Length: 252
Length: 252
Image (cartoon, rainbow over all chains, first blue to last red; front, side, top):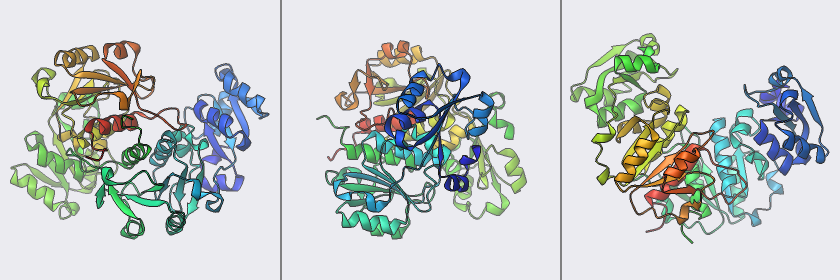
């Protein structure tokens, strides 16, 4: 079961791990249809009584196990006594009704699981409609990605494994403006019209977006840096862009 | 020298490590007065010729060493062939002219070096005037903190080791509004007047701000979360607050 920490095993078994009370609670609340089994450490069952009760009410199997068994199943060293095995939640791009979408985040070749998870968490925070992990990005079901989403993975539609040109083309056909987030952008964030449906295209944490992807977007947008810092990291830049999109930082 | 990775040794030696080209370049450009020595891997000297030349022009000692020697000196596994030993840059709180300060960030009991460094980087990005590491926070010279500031540590005044009540009192006396960032805030970010001098008081990544600190602040402010995410992480929340403070996300 700890083998679910490895991508090849996850793909063969068709299950991934949600570790810890926050992730398991959100899985049970938002996507009980995807939960295969829940494992709770006997000594922690009381502490997690609310999650366990909600799971049982939803007809889910809950197994009590010892701390050693749970630790052997986990990727993390501190699973806090609770984990769930879940079926993949990604949807095919063709099944997403892009005409109803207002805000999208596309991760292109993002490799660091903590960054990817944090960006997904930010997308969920502002109520984005869709997150896309391009082919070449970290596996959305990597245990570190799942952990750093803190349950947000279960909250919104996720598409995985699409080549970047294909997702850009699909967004374009749907009339969704493609905004490449790039420190060397032609325009700065406050100059961009964020009242139309749009997608933030985020690049790799080290090398950013290649020219080919930037050129295929409608606008290349940089976050203003009025101070001395040379750049923002991926998660910071995405958070700022997403909060600008949500328009919730301005007084009404 | 690798022992500089440990706080006790850093304090005894009075030096800390800036690892990698970005950190060393910013140290040389912004605070050459603090640089003790620069070490460059012989094989990387050409690649880092600009930094080395700037350092020599500033009268700094540059030593060529082998990759093994450099690796033994470093905390990181990938120092990219360049590091500097630096004298501490923090200033006593009493030496800061708070009457000239418009934007401050206070890290209270922040323990994770990556979070602390990222918040400092964000403060630098928006042009904040001061960053304070409270007593009980991670050491500002921890190699992981230094690395995650990506050079920003050398860009702005930093105060370390002050007890939280003391820094809050000093800010209050100087007429700087103390804004506690807290998910359970009484007001939301767009409701706050950010045109006056103010300080963001950021809490520990796991338990946030204790009631005692919140009560000692002028306002307790939450970042709006229009979506489903339960919370933002510390670095995301700080980035959003700081960009709201900078006022650079609104069209002019």
